[in-house]
Image 1 (tube, rainbow, N blue to C red):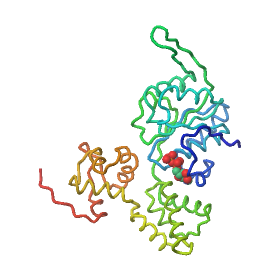
Image 2: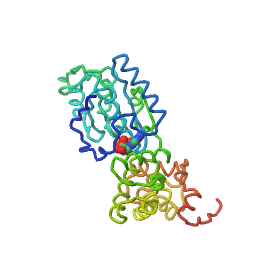
Image 3: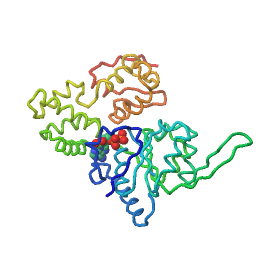
Image 4: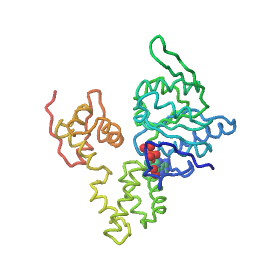
Amino acid sequence: AREPIVTESPLGEDPERDLRPQRIADMVGQREVMQRLDIVLDAARKRGEPLGHILFDGPPGLGKTTFATCIPREMNVPLVTSSGPALKAPKDLIPYLTNLEEGAVLFIDEIHRMPKPVEEYLYTAMEDFRLDIVLGEGVNARTINLKLKQFTLIGATTRAGMLSGPLRDRFHIREHLGFYTVEELVEIIRRNSRKLQIPLTDEAAVEIARRSRGTPRVANNRLRWVRDYADSKAGGSATLEVARAALLMAGVDVLGLDKQDRGYLETIIRVFGGGPVGVDAVAHTMNLATDTLSDEVEPFLLRSELVVRTPRGRVVTTKAYQHLQIKPIEKPKE
Ligand code: ADP
């Protein structure tokens, strides 16, 4: 297969490259998503047509970029990548679109962060493979129509809800990536420990998987940390005890929560009496961006039922109090 050419990647050198699966068959989990993708890839290949536009959404580190880089390999077409924040004005999009080869994939990460005018430019490009460029201003303004090669747009977003309806509707395939099971993460950790040549016991693999917030990227990072710890403190062998000690030192608890996760729960409990509280207020108190909380911290805590969303705001659950070993304060009845 032809290596996809990645041009002008604003993401820079891919820090995940050594562990990122190269083919869809090397990816673990997301079975249903894979089965549906298999069908559309197969059908497009049989018809000799470019693939329809695909949108992936879900929390960070669950495989959106991995899918986006594997798909062009499966189709044997080039890949060009960009990201929402890098596309500040419509003119930033033009070189990407006009240089695309027939059938090529354009991957736009964080697509929800594209400004509205850029988004509007994409509409005709996605639908009719045409660009209408306005030159000049006022009475002298002229529109030039530019015909584009048929291409496939793959978008990734941590928040499908923030995408405008018209953009969302122009994706033929929309897939949500959910958290991975412990078994799936164990499989990923086993494979990667072989790749990184880390002697890891089965119990240690399970322990890391349990404490990785259902997220392959987190599992990979924790695996690397356990390796460093094992090399430095335990003669290189990553046993269960070594993994536990390493994770304890990194501030990762038995549920896999890190300092920031616990900080979020503790802030709601100590500052806001357990909630309900708006996410903005929590973010402000923690001196963090609201996006960081709602995209990166909250999804797993919601999934773990440590916090719930109510119409009046976030409320921590009894499970969170038990986990943090904090006694709930009796609230006067309203
Ligand atoms: P996202 O784009 O959703 O933030 P990535 O695709 O960059 O996440 O995934 C982060 C890392 O996690 C990848 O480099 C890869 O090593 C690992 N990973 C993600 N999904 C899978 C998977 N399904 N199977 C194996 N490893 C995966």
